[in-house]
Image: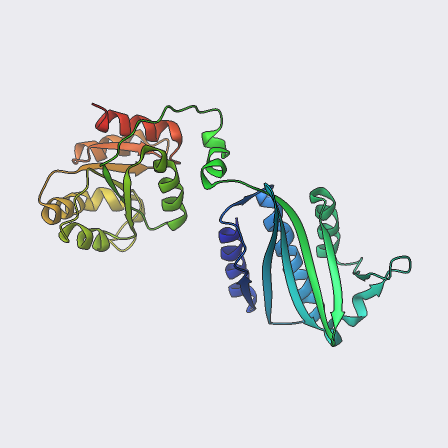
Length: 297
């Protein structure tokens, strides 16, 4: 979730000529889980609110976490010079707590409504002319495997995992998030997994006397004789498979990862020499089918 959040903020920064420095504290867990889309949404609205109120082009947001059992409270904190935001800070009469109020701002209204949904809150403090504005959101702690199992393509899929210890798999994909999910799905099989982002990196790995039993190849590989985006692999598959053969110097199963609803392309890949195909998004069922087909004795 935090990976996606950082990517989206980078896009916003480029579009609006802003810069947000993100500092992650050391106690952030590897995986948190909740309503991911709305958590990302509320943090982006929060960023836009603070930016608009302070007219700042560069800010720092520190992300911290307090863990209690299987729950985590994420804290997104901005430090802002008091002079930039003092007109929107009020002290609650009954509690003397500081509040950030901007009722006519659409970002503020959305944040307030989403915070109610998360049972979260905004905490404001002031010390030495520096205002700390923190957004606190509750999340559940889950393992990476639990997160991926909860995705739509994996729901209600039951798999009996076979132990394929000793098998080595290479993943060739330029999308690191896809690689991460693939590695998590492969983990229960006890296989060894290595990943690269480009065909050149694949060639280097294969030429270093690394041995693999199977290679998963994404069907979109930038910068590999790219002259037609949609037909990239079709036009270069001979070169690609020759790359594998020439560098490895031994037979390796090659599985192409293809987009759905394109049976003509799938058959072309098989005709051109790929061992098999697997349809994206990769899920527990189709991955298990491929592994059992080629590894199960």
